[in-house]
Length: 306
Image (cartoon, rainbow, N blue to C red; front, side):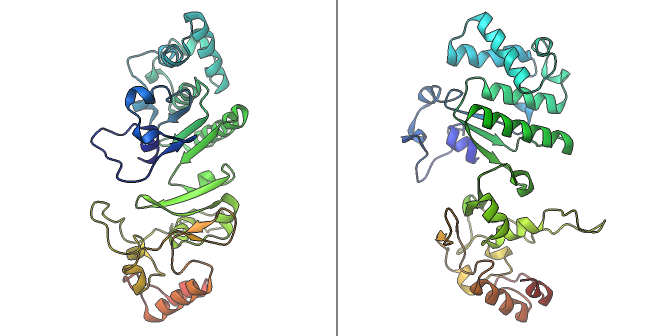
């Protein structure tokens, strides 16, 4: 939803209630579809989650790539063909000439995603959105796709926003991370800082859920208890409080503002942040009571780990 909001791709029934979407000083949230056509492809582009639903199943690969070249760059037929071949080659698709004449169902999942990336890069965008680009791909292919995106970003000198539910995916591949919960940013920091000095309990819980090579076999993954809030009728106070082991009474009543962590580019929304005296005291109090203010069970063992 975030990527589609910025790209102006949400259905018309969706309404932007507040704020702006600024791109190089231009508020793209107020532009109509015809105005956005000058931005799509040439200025910003998007790699969608599922290549099978992103690609037209009854249209050949070549035609789908050339479509944007005709529309945005006004290329001739021969130039578009040569560019399409070069694009497929740049995303490591073998025999690109032959692939232009094939349909999506004739390609593997990883190959289809490479085609989607080629289409997204066709017009040389300055900003690329990659929305869960490794969904439904096996682990080996996931790594190949992520490495490909990183390579293309560096070679083309473009910015990239990588949307993912897996923090392990962004480690080593991003400069900054913004952690979102219930539709809003709860922590943002340089990547290295977030992994070593996280402040929001949700970020900590996400980190704890990442499998570790040092874990014994058959170790159960740590899940975050409870359920995400109802976005139509959200609870008062901090939206993560009902699932938070640090939660105090204040968290159930007040919505924490975005606070400065005291380090460049690092901010968070929490009254009792992880790794601080306030957070440690809140956790100790909850461990002594056996639960947080919102009813999340808290054990002494959890307290001792901080």
